Length: 146
Image (cartoon, rainbow, N blue to C red):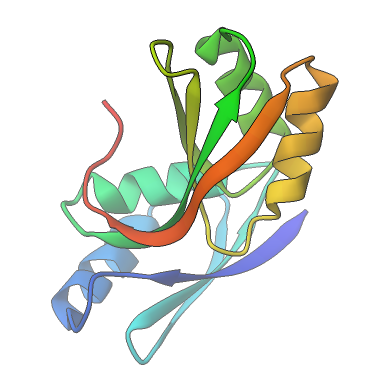
């Protein structure tokens, strides 16, 4: 499926946009890219590449992105590897997931226009009960997941 997303990079960094443009042009599945003001519009084919791949490629260059951070309280411990594998295949736009077992909090980093209800529905279908969403905010992310 063809998807177009606007990617917001760290404020007022034209060199960052140019660097991201050059790096992303080498990835299979990127169909079109255009710079608008301080944003990068990217059209890509989800059968070949995911938004997570695109975001990780930009972040690995040391370029910050404005992404959505959502923290949810869950009722039970979860296998984050399994959850991340399933969610990343089903919901394009999710960049990373992490889980703190001590507090039962699930952290999701995603594109700002990703529908959180789709993520929550998929989690529910995996028998993961979300008690509440405690944080839902835009945040500048500076590091790729290791």
